[in-house]
Image (cartoon, rainbow, N blue to C red):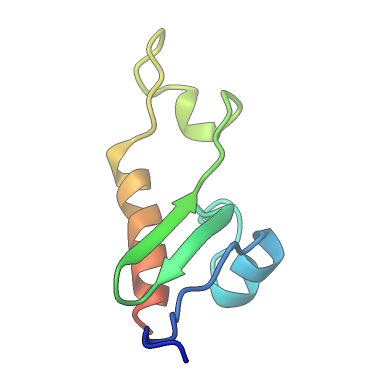
Length: 84
């Protein structure tokens, strides 16, 4: 008999399952993959970025970085869905 409680963790979720869970679409879909989701511990998600992203075109020329607002939006997207 197993004395440990059943885990409610899920993952990984590919882009199709992410899109089924979130209402966002390009360019506001800032999650490409969910590696793990455990309501009691947290979520690990990935956003793949490339130099072709629109916000890199003028955001600190010569030293492109992802704007903090975009990072915050990605975090908000996954946190809202993981607590729903």
